[in-house]
Image 1: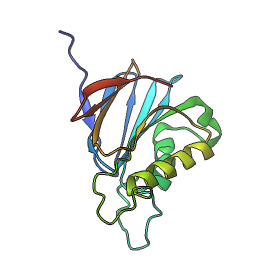
Image 2: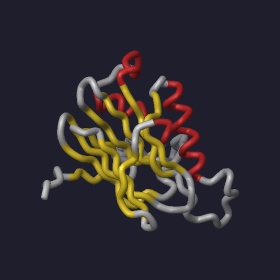
Image 3: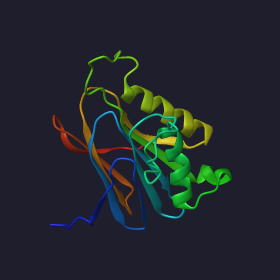
Length: 168
C-alpha cells in the first residue's frame, strides 16, 4: 500500500504553502472557502481557509489571520507564494466550499457561502487567475486535500466520501 505524504491542516483564517511535495488539508468547510493557488512552473501551491467575504471591520484586530476575509486572502496568498501581481498568469485557482449550512435568517440566494464564492470569483477575475477546480454551494459541508507533486485535489462530503475533483 502506498503511503500518503504528511498533511498540513489549515485552520480558519490561515494560509499554508507547499513546494514540490506535500499535502495541504482543510477539514469541515461549511460556508467557508478553501482557496487554492497553484504555480505549475515552480511546483508550489498555497491554500487559504477563508471565513467571510469582508471587508474587515476596523474593530477586528485578528491581523494574525491573513485569510480570514476573502478580499485579503488572495493578496496574502500571492505574497506567501512570492508571486508579483504582474505574474498571476502563472497561477491556476481552485474554490471549494461556500455551502449554505444554516439557513436561519439567511436568504438562500444571499447566504454567507454564496457571498464568499462571489467575492473570491471577483478577486480571481481581477487578478486574472483561471479557476480550474471548483466545487461550491449546496447544503453539504466538505473537506479537502490538495497534494503535490501530482496537483491532485480530493474533496470529501459525508454523503459521497472522498473523490478526486478533475481540472476544468
